[in-house]
Structures are given as C-alpha cells and as structure tokens.
Image 1 (tube, rainbow, N blue to C red):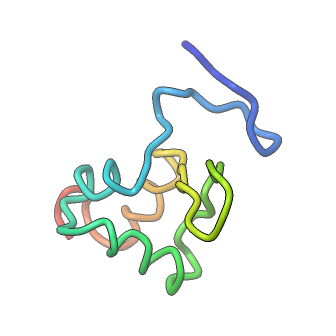
Image 2: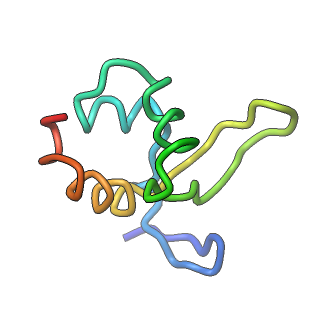
Length: 79
C-alpha cells in the first residue's frame, strides 16, 4: 500500500482521482458535471489537493470521499 499524508490525512495514492476519473466511475457524461457538483452541492467533498497555479488548477479528490457522497445520491455507476 502506497500512501501519502495530505491535508492532515493518510491516503492511498492509488485512490486519488481527477474529474475525468469521477466521470468514468460514476457514469456521468462530462467533467463539467463534476465541477458543477463541486460548486453547487454542499455535500460534495472538497478536493484533497489542487495542482498548479492560476485560475484553473487541477483538482484532485480522494475516491472514497466521492464514493461516499455518490452513494447518498444514487448507486455508484447509475446516476
């Protein structure tokens, strides 16, 4: 198990995901949907990391956090 300490948490690096990974795993159509949930759904998890500077950093989430959120919305893979 490879892990790293981010934001005061130990996480498995193999479970870090970007918006495109979330789209694929949840069966969404576009990465914009992930960003919409992030901005408009207070229950959507905060990214565990932001990579890059400027106005459009790449957001990285911890999959178990997203999966827990999605389970409350719909069965994973069935939006």
